[in-house]
Length: 393
Ligand code: ATP
Ligand code: MG
Picture (cartoon, protein in one colour):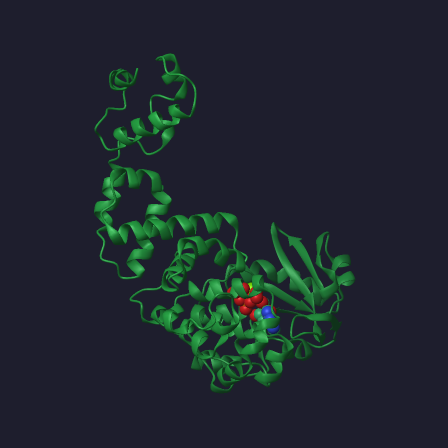
């Protein structure tokens, strides 16, 4: 077993020695079998949260109500969740309460897809109630049990299905896909934050284009902000030569494909509950993309946009198949005499000492000097700049 499991094994042993059952469950077992990188480990146990807390010295009440305790052990942290079923699904969302159960099979039954319904003990033995191993072999995403019922319990699972398609390069099993098409309207009940997280994972996953196509054909796209009625525009995404690997590029590309005017970008990003930082960067990328598609940017354009936005925009242009010479752009950027305003050898105070009156005019002159320096017409040197500004005095 990989180190991450071996490190966690004493935690499971300790639970077992105390008379409880304990297993590795969910994504980590799936990723182990797939040979993928395992980023975290989830543990399921028959012990109640209070019993888990009594067994370990350092614990955190992560989600006691849902049965989850975080255990700190040898410098690692593990989420340990009591076997549970989910009941009282209201409004097709997360259950309002959970019921603890005594056996693993009841716990596994509530999980979304067969590939996520695997468990493993510390001896490396896999427990597979729903032929998740068979589906991993066939590269299929299949709901555990009746997909229609499972999507009514929690409609987010429909987004998770297309997300896993993208991340794992798997296909959707037919009945699972049909159930999404028939029940896509249920997605209305899910909070935009939860939809967004799955959408982003889908959009930057390694099989994003195929997953996006299914996101469109199952009509899930009709239930998310600003996508309704726009499938013709969005159909370009699955046909792109490449797909994004960065979230900034994903949002920028979607906005460009939707042909959103600049003054609508903010509203779009807000509707998806994206952060201000993400919104600002996407706005910068989309406007610089517009500049790039119209003309060769000036040195001052490159200066104003800055390195991060330049690289993000080059990524977007590349994915959208815009013929731009990214090497030339980057080389031109790197050759700029200054790359930020801090590097300018003069400032407002310098201008005042040279005899200028304080006021808004100062900013205009400063901006002009900066542009001349960036364009290489004026040297970034106090004597040269003094000579240049004399004409204004
Ligand atoms: P990732 O690699 O993205 O972490 P994961 O499979 O671990 O993938 P998580 O969202 O971390 O996904 O959830 C852990 C496990 O909990 C899943 O493997 C699945 O068994 C179960 N699970 C998570 N969300 C749901 C859901 N909405 N409905 C049913 N089971 C779920
Ligand atoms: Mg996980």
